[in-house]
Image (cartoon, rainbow, N blue to C red; front, side, top):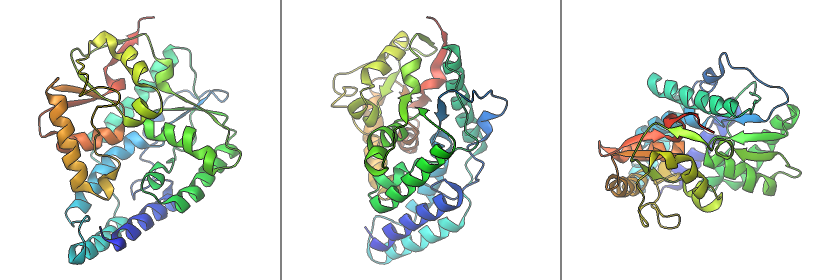
Length: 310
């Protein structure tokens, strides 16, 4: 691993966050279109996206570009990778329109699922990133500074309660922010906590669990309660809470080849259970998609849920 590459990656993320509140150079309004036409309850909990569903295709495109330059190798290729990072930092990464539409659809689906249960959420004037990637890549100093900036953003808007939509954001806000941001006392819950009693439109799928949800946020059983009407195919090893394999994230931006190999192993495991795989995390989606090669079809959990039945 080239130190110059890591340094440039850190600079890329930090500079992008300073410019647009997003960790990669992309359209600053990328995460806003899903809210069009939706009501916002000023006194309700904030439905906070951290932009992650919309950033998933941006991350995929960035990794594809950087992977070509051999970012995991030293010597000439490592130095070349540092140049590549600077180049990517000057580009505007544009995800495919259909992926943006899909992210919009997922977020609007979550909004409707909550509304069906009487949870009238507040929508922020701007979607901003949580900073999770800085922490996960070990850029602790930069994360601490950015987390305080995000906390100030919330405080200025009177945010007291947040509903998250992905495991990385939930973990970083609930478990990590209080250690780095003095006085951070925003109540954190997940949309998963509110949506039991839905129907499931898909049958006989496999579940790929987020490591964070399953092992660190105690949502493994809840996810199975939600998805049980779809009769998911389980295996004590391949989908066990402590034994299921990882998607390869979030190391795809520093070791993309390793992440791809890990994801390929996971795809192989899941394909033994079902062609259809339900994921709960945009990072898992990106990594498994890169390794799928037609072996599995990926579905975000909200996409397969139907009208409330209870």
